Amino acid sequence: MINGTIYKGIGGFYYVMVDGMLYECKARGKFKNINMTPTVGDFVQINIVDEAEKTGVIETILPRKSILLRPNVSNVDQAIIVFALKNPEPNMMLLDKMILLAENANLDVVLCFNKCDIDDEGRFDTLRSIYNNAGYDILRTSPKTGEGIVSLKAILNNKISVFSGPSGVGKSSLLNAIENGFKLQTGDLSHKIKRGKHTTRHSELLPLKSGGTVVDTPGFTSLSLHEIPLDRLSSLFPEFESISAACQFDNCKHLSEPNCAVKAAVEAGEIHASRYEAYQYIYHEIETLGRKYKKW
Ligand SMILES: Nc1nc2c(ncn2[C@@H]2O[C@H](COP(=O)(O)OP(=O)(O)OP(=O)(O)O)[C@@H](O)[C@H]2O)c(=O)[nH]1
Ligand SMILES: [Mg+2]
Ligand SMILES: [Zn+2]
Image (tube, rainbow, N blue to C red; front, side, top):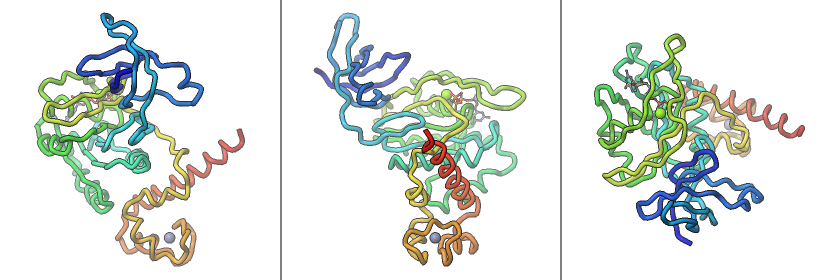
């Protein structure tokens, strides 16, 4: 058996990179039985079926360092969460949910606000104040003007980074801008509703010449967080963490308990109201989903 990395998966085939060569592989049926699906980014062991045709079979999935469920990718170090400042309009709830999924997978999070060349309403300043306060690294970028591309590239050095975000925000355009050799397909927005057209169809690992690897992924527009345990939720908001030590109750949910330090910090403006509202909303959403799933 030889070791490789899954670079891409399409229609039941996995493209596994071994020493600079791609092998088209199927997966052993046993993975289905143990409810394990080979995932882009997985380190695997394969047996070669035909060396000339470059085909093989995945025999083993090696232990994962991390697993992100949406977009589905293994072994990445950090998530570059990309939202456009305009076209499409940023959806803050979706942004908070994507941050939570990345936090839940223990990834470093960088927020990349793109299309700054058309930010005529000054949205960047608002977003920066909310998410700087939450402790996140923030970039302001535009592949159109080149702004922020050097900073983005520096953050990607020697790490494996997944680019995630809604369709049409410019993930593939940013990747084309950071690496000369990339020719990823990019797509226009639909005219009337200014939504992306789901141009990127499959996640794909792309090594950078300067060291490091990026993963381009298809955009999505909604996200369910039912796999996040409710009692873990508040720990995924970094700006709640230190403050919650001062809550009266150890297991304070920061909802209707008395003497809640998190709620006090929201009122004092130390925690941004929009983040607390997202917390409340997502808490109730997971609770409702949990009830629904239990019925089955
Ligand atoms: N004005 C402006 N347009 C941009 C910028 N970045 C990307 N675009 C445009 O936005 C559209 C969508 O870009 P893509 O790179 O395909 O977006 P994506 O996030 O990869 O979308 P999916 O693959 O569908 O998930 C294209 O028409 C790009 O030319 C930018 O900084 N400014
Ligand atoms: Mg794309
Ligand atoms: Zn509390």
